[in-house]
Image (cartoon, rainbow over all chains, first blue to last red; front, top):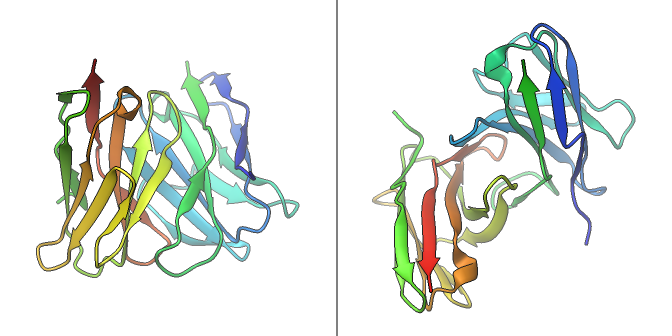
Length: 115
Length: 109
């Protein structure tokens, strides 16, 4: 069964450093998402991406964040200058088609720890 | 105002019990509704979509009440493996999905 994959599973970085989190969505999916989940808190939407551009983004997704689909298979989330409060689990998700009623499939997540 | 609200629990129930979770959403334009389950430190996994007419999948039944902006999940004959956090998820556009805080369930032997 196809699945969303994410690398690395755990990333430790120093405050102020740039990190890139990588995701490979399911191959015939067209819509891609990033979420974060701070430990003990709810899953929070960051950004959605379709047709090589951002469809929607939340207030969390400020100028420090960017997304890219560099090669038709990978989908990356870059945090330019990490802060302590960026420590969280970051989940990538993909969805086969747009419109309503079509569920998302999540990757296993990348645990980001900012020291 | 929270987009999606759930009772966080925890719910501790014996094996074989029936348990129900509720969820309310604030945006009346919401179009799609889902229940996901999340095990500790794992990704959310789809449990079931919620349809207007209500739907059932084995021991799980989901209901939607658009007038009251309310979604429910009923689990019958609880198993130990049902222990998890259950997430209510709502979207209006299909581009932004709102998660509830989740309801924690522990099924006790």
